[in-house]
Image 1 (cartoon, rainbow, N blue to C red):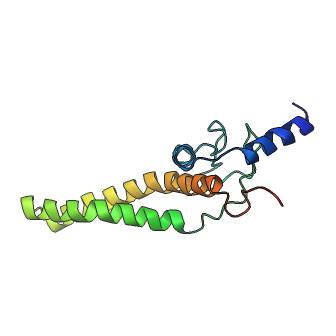
Image 2: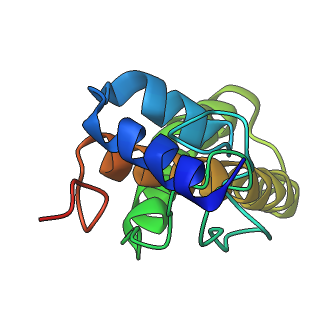
Image 3: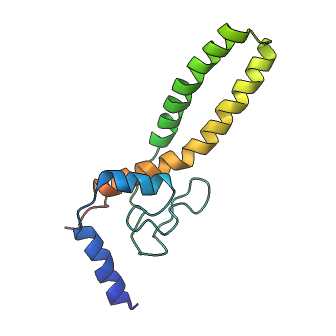
Amino acid sequence: MSDLQTNDHANDHADDERTVWPAIGRGWRRKCPCCGSGPLLKSYLKVNDTCNVCREELYHHRADDGPAYLTILVVGHLMAPLLHLTFVTWRPDPLTLFTIFAVGCVGLSLYLLPRLKGAVVGFQWARQMHGFGKSA
């Protein structure tokens, strides 16, 4: 594909109606919010500047601390009731309880953080925020 065709292809995507939930879903899967094929992340949390497949520019994202806040929100709301329920029901040794829930919190956080970052970038792309929209 020539550079002119690639640019036309990218401009076609800018004119399309961008639906929010499919873009969030593609971001959750750590794929390009535009095409759903190319990788969104090049390392654990580093977003690619452009999609390798559709050439959509992704460097516009401003995910910043949003994914970290969402991760803390989800992990806290899942683990706190489980911690209480476990303690009230079985009364395990405090060190055992701490060890199990510390590993659970860290594991869940490491799992969710890149997926939530992808979802935030997908949301921003779909809403045409921070430079993802049509150029003036």
